[in-house]
Image (tube, rainbow, N blue to C red):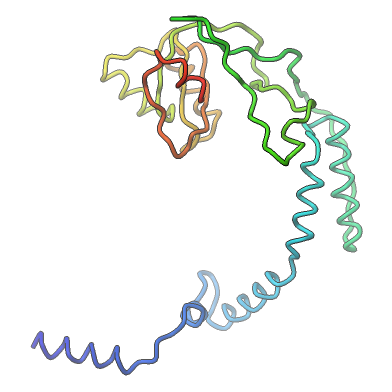
Length: 230
């Protein structure tokens, strides 16, 4: 019986005309749409995808990232005016609305350094990208944690993976206490604010996030060359 079923299946596969990926995709119904409406929706989506011009998108991106434009600055206002004028040129109604909000800005350059076993300043600036003048613009805002108090934090360093509750539980099981220490966590898997809150709840002095998403951080913090790559 099993042999007959296998033979029948092979014959059906051989005689059937294979569908292309596009054809197979077109025959499926989109969630929330009827079969008829799915066909119409795909037609509209294809027309929409045919409209964008890569050159136009590239120029808009170049213009919008030409200079640093942190919220509340003249450069930020110029960016808003550019977007408004572009929308108007497309025949859309666009206006600017002004709101008063509390925003803070750094007034000093941040300092990060190792103090043991030797004193070594660590860079807190991203490296300039060759061929991209905006990456070395002197108006780039120094790194700072918005709405945090200014201060000087000194303490031992503990690595806490993603900085989520289960990571601190794992540290406790391993006999590692983060109270009064600087915690370094990986970017991702949660909102940044959650990482700060959980670090505070566990008694950490400070929480730093490193952005090495695809390369786990090595845990030997006695080596300055490793910390310099954070």
